[in-house]
Structure formats: C-alpha cells, structure tokens
Image (cartoon, rainbow, N blue to C red; front, side):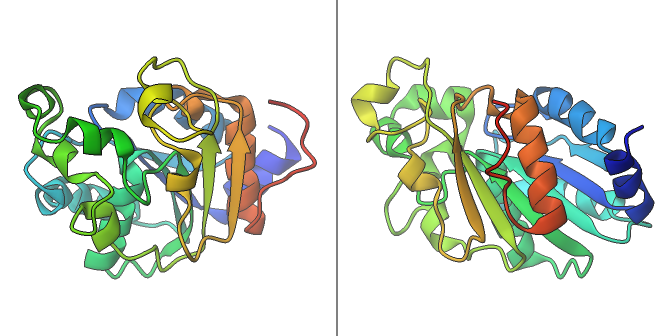
Length: 227
C-alpha cells in the first residue's frame, strides 16, 4: 500500500457512493475498487430509482447511509448523475453531522434538457420511472427545488459524448446526457471538466484521483496530466 493510501486508511474516512438514474451499485464497482485502493472504506449504496418521487427514494437511501456511517470519523459522498440530487435531498432531510466533503460526477444540478424533451413520453415512465420526468429545467422541477449541499462540494463534468441525441438536444459542451453548464451549482468549491462521457465518467482512474484530491484538500489537482 502506498503512503497516500495508508494515510487515507488511518483517518478512518468512509466514502458513500450514490449511483445514477436507471442504474445500480454495480455501475459504481470500478470506482469503488479504485477508492478502496487509495485506502478509503467505501459504502456503495444500491437503491431503486424507478420511484414516484425523491421522498420515496430517500426511504431506501436514508437508512442505508445511516448504516454506512456507523463508526466512521468522517463520511464523504461521491455521486453520479441523479445521485447528486439524491445527496442534495438527503442533506436537506438528515442532520448527518459526520458529513465531510462531496464530489458530484456529471450531476444535472440545473436540470436536464433531455428530461425536458422527454417529458410526457409514456416510455420514459415505463423504462425509467416517474422520477425521471421531474428532472427538467423548469422552476418546479426537482433540481431547482433542492438546496445546494451544506458541506464543501466539488463537481466533475464530462465533455465527450457517444449518445447521438446529445448534440441535438444539449448545448455544447456536454457529455451526451448533461450539459457542462447544467452541472454547475452556486456554492461549489471547485469545478473540473474532463474528457469523458456521462456513461463511463465514474470508471476513469484520473477521475478517481481527482476525487481523492478534493476529499483530502478541498480542491481538484490541475497539475495532474493523466486522463
């Protein structure tokens, strides 16, 4: 184990992972492995995103997070996509005095333009569930109704895409699902754009290193050259 990893292990810090819409904890396994290799204890929370609203989702996530933080000195959060909104809702609903820092990967913090386009399509509810229709950019949509995290947080956005719909419905730059502009949120400590797509941004070794940098120092490391 490297000195860096030993230092993380000695702190007793835990990272809670929160996955995105229509996904599961399996999609965060590579990131979980990378963060464990850096010495963190990692709690990869699984939950069903095909629910009616965010309050219903928190009924699963809240107790799972409580189980994750038992015995930890400090608990950090790393989220992907919808997971960033889940964290914002969780921090509104729960005290979580152990909460340290957070890194959001490709979050629709200002809402999803694609969700605007798909609003009212029956197949959206069938495949992704009713919550998907609440992720747009209207003032009444979930991203606009949630407060920013009350803990220090940074955002990593992608600017590569493979989704052919992305260029048609999203302002550039974007990751095929969320525009870079939509990832930004007032109060963030730092914002970083990396050359990765929405689907696979969490698997990048470089992204894992940037998460580690932010959780340790509150800033991303722009001197790193690996991508």
